[in-house]
Image (cartoon, rainbow, N blue to C red; front, side, top):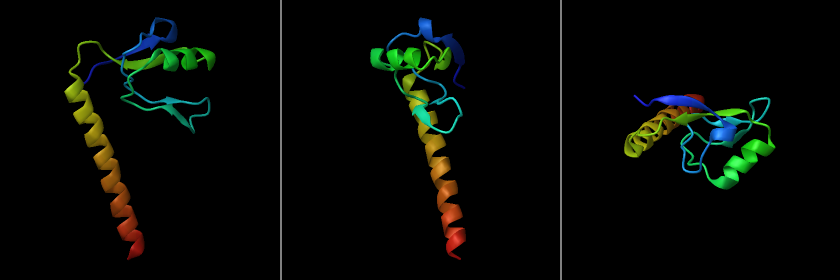
Length: 90
């Protein structure tokens, strides 16, 4: 299991990994994806947009495990999408 923590934007450091996506105010647009490794540019963007805090993968978590977890989530979403599309064709 991956441990996630909430970190105030003012305390975010380059290299930290997002544990949840960052969305716009109404939650309709993904600004930064889950699993993104934050850069100084990303942090500046978060501050400019007034985003107070983000969900970060706790330091010390194995990056390979995180990537495997993200890949599994994406594969599951793809499978669901394909099943739905096949169902619609029938």
